[in-house]
Length: 79
Image (cartoon, rainbow, N blue to C red; front, top):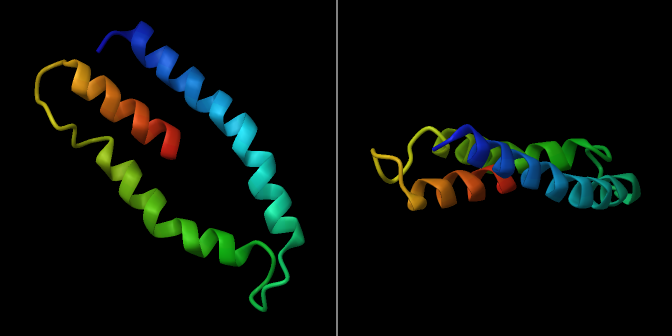
C-alpha cells in the first residue's frame, strides 16, 4: 500500500470523525446514567475499539492488494 493511499484513508477517517465526534459528544453531554455522563460511553467503546485496533495489524492478505486497502479503510473509519 502506497503512502498516498494511506494518507487518503487517514484523511477520510478524520473527516468522518469530524462529523461523528460532535454527535457522540452531544449524546454524552445529555446522558444521565448513574455511573456518570462519560464513563458509560468509554466502557461500552472499550472492547470494540480494542478489537478494531488489533484487526489493523492482521490484514486478510499478506501481499499488497485492494482487499487490504478496503480492510485498513474500514478499520480506520471504525476506530
